[in-house]
Length: 85
Image 1 (cartoon, helix red, strand yellow):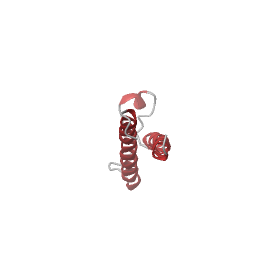
Image 2 (cartoon, rainbow, N blue to C red; image 1 turned 90 degrees about the vertical axis):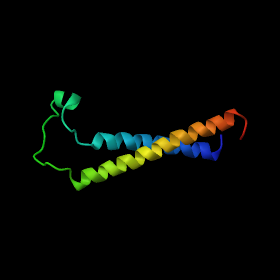
Image 3 (cartoon, rainbow, N blue to C red; image 1 turned 60 degrees about the vertical axis):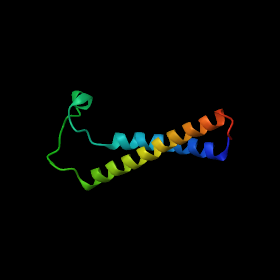
């Protein structure tokens, strides 16, 4: 394995953990399993806060990086499988 592959694997592991934490930090929108187990208490705020919007942006950014790592690792493995590297 090359340094490129190790870098992608480490980045994939870091973004996987980070993405999991960011998704768990999101506030529930009501309904579904969260409200069934007592998480359905809604706040009186109608709009989403600046912190929630920033959390959405960070989650999307980390998700894009995670997806790029998956695609990059898949392409690298395909190249190695065909004997190109």
